[in-house]
Length: 285
Ligand code: PGA
Image (cartoon, rainbow, N blue to C red; front, side):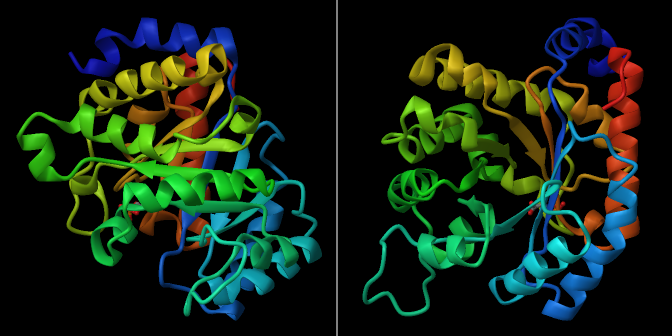
């Protein structure tokens, strides 16, 4: 019997009770020119028409594609339906930080969302928890929505410190965040070992083992308001496995990489996730 079957009742009860919205989006990483990004959004538009408003969608292209993404979003009538996110932001308002982008630079072109703490930034570019402790409040205070990613490495998991690793990341990054900013915060749980072509998709029990303590940590810091922060799962999400994640208690959506870089793939994973939630909870997002 799968974990999904075993405690599905308990998980789905919460889903049905709260009727929580599904969050769904993709990070293009270092892929897609401005033209390709604009085409993606234009092709996405008619498909979004078939998706109810309560499903929150987002697309995170590279910096150079942001203006094209914003223009294409407006042109395709998607402005209220799709958040456009940047993949990083600096904490300072301005200054001698060659190669960096400020919050004001993002908001001035209409960006409404930013991804922070992705495993590739932490792993390849030395992004620290301390830097995130400055970036997350700077972005939230400026009115941006923030998707903060946390996740343990394979080694941390092997040593049995996955949950404490992600809680440490969460607590440091959110240290200066106040409750009034919480409606703009989302947390992405992405085990580092599950990300990318060489990754292994997590099992539902791996996800539960970490997101239950993560949710508890949000509650300890923010009280009841911590219960409404959406927690998304990411890492090798595909049409075949997305149902295992979106029906888990505490999982409010999916953060998808390569399976959603083409519009057809984006739609396939989204539809499979919506169908799985519908089957599990008796309503369809
Ligand atoms: P993936 O990427 O779906 O290609 O594993 C996930 C991510 O990096 O967010």
